[in-house]
View 1 (cartoon, rainbow, N blue to C red):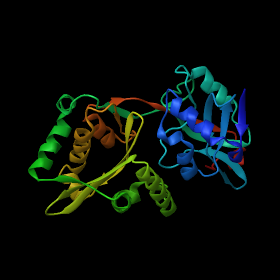
View 2 (view 1 turned 135 degrees about the vertical axis):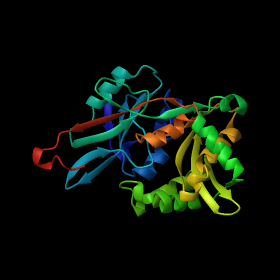
View 3 (view 1 turned 90 degrees about the horizontal axis):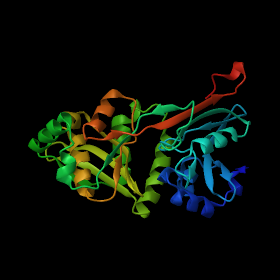
Length: 298
């Protein structure tokens, strides 16, 4: 039986045990992560935490709705069962009717009828670096040559500086992300850093200083490219290709995937594909039960 639990009713020890043993485990679904990005989250739970689904919700004009939190690419249903299509549909049907609008992302194992696929890209890096490099495309190789000719180099960078650099250089292009959301991100990275799950790096040149910065969250078999950008000078000098290549070199040979977190933007998608990454879609679920006069609410 699938039960709806309010936030205070969730047994977070059992929850995290289910997530850690799920065939589709991912760091976004752990209770501590959800507590940061959606502090009042509720849940659907099958029997004694055999399968679970977080319900990240908000309220606007007295209307409760489900939303996808920033910095959390995919959630959905998590269980040990690798064949989840029927289970996913049961969970979607069990979402309480009080949530009049549902606009969420389900994870890559939650494929079921009627869902819209979204692009994500994964790159296995369990082989040696030389073998991985043979899969690079022309764009990556050209930009790496440019970066090396410019003498770029990689250094560890405090996570707060990564966030500040991103906000300064990419913030205006990131739709809907507000100052408080960046404070949330710093809180998230603080915990990831304490857990040794965070890799924060910057690309420099001796002449121009910091050109690009990125943060990777490493958990399970994934190194998630969680946040990253370059400035205008860095774009011309191939900074982000150099950064990604350097991280791949550093982590190569480990049982990991680089999870690029995907994009629907052509240029960003080409960047991911230039490293030989393959497409692994996740799924959007949207349902609008709002009265017609309120259909514009998100």
